[in-house]
Amino acid sequence: MPPDPATDGRWRWSLIVLAGLVPFAADMLRNFQLFAPGQLAGSFAAVLGGTTVVYGLCALSIAVLGRRCPALRRRAGAVFAGAAALVFAAFLCDANLTELRQVFGWPRPAALGAVLALFVLYWAVASRLGARKTSLLLLALLAFRAGQAGWAVASSARRGDDLLSAREIGLYEQVKLARTPNIYFLCLESYHGFDAMRELYGFDNADFRAFLERTGFVVVPHALSNYSFTMTSLQSFFQMGHHYAAGAFGNHDSLYARGFISGSGTYYNPVLRILKRSGYDIVYLLPSDYYYRPGAGLVDHSLLDRSWRFAPLKVSLARFIGREPDTLVPEYPRRVADALAGWPLDRPAFFFAKLGAEHSARGYDYRTGREAFVAQYVETVIRENRKIEALCRQIAERDPQGIIVLAGDHGA
Image (cartoon, rainbow, N blue to C red):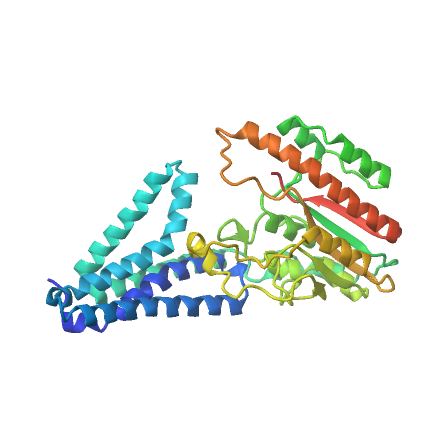
């Protein structure tokens, strides 16, 4: 039975709005831990406003053009269904293209064809069911995804500090530092251990190792990472122990990681708590707001004071927004060096910065492009070694009593 035009017309706004809100909400149910509440609220409001504009344009077009073309008024339901299908496909485009190309190895034209087929299929279904039934179907889909997310969260620890036992927390709370030198924690992105670099890439990073030993570093032999993502590695560093991805959630992220990294709320960060109790300033000299949101937790100073309000939209509309949601620090290595050079030495501080090789180049395919990737990775490591060495020399000359920790977070 075709939908009743009179009843169905009252659902056309919700048809288009839900076509945007449902896939966006589904993305956020897996990725909410990436963002601050204000960013989530701002992005949901933007989706609501944008889809309402689409509805308004459809209604205005039908009202104006329908005077000259009565057939358009009769087909108004199909027009609204087409607009909803366009919104729905736009929000699913990036996720589908990425998965079809990277996981299933589809060529770009085939992946685009699949997205187009999804658009046509949704248009046909929405036209057949009508605005009311399609809206209810979208709400049912959202309820199902919310149930999945709730189950994932419930299956993890109930609270962030459940990942540390009461006994461990009790011990950490009793720690008193005999000395309070400045501590410089430099996380080296995509840095393997020396053995792994030789085995995987045939590259002997001996010059860098010689610099470390000559400068007074203790080099741990045969070091391996237990985690393949920066967030889980950082959580392990700050937790001072393995969590075995107990808080793993969403797109290769960690439900509790940002809470641990910044010491926010109930997320007990033993490193920051011990240092704060000993009179340390916590100084995060990080390249972007990806790792924590400015002003969060126990962090006293950073290179950033804001986050992009609409960063969550990048998860669903990456190809349409066209720029990274991270609030980036311009000229980052220089800003770090300047901040350390000008920091007063009369009060202890814990400095957390991030250097290293960053991630592999766009489009790298391990099945066909390994040789080129290895060459680029080795070249990048050699270049970044010089930056790391320069910063370590600067710190050692200005603050000879300081402690520098270099830690590779995971492989390339």
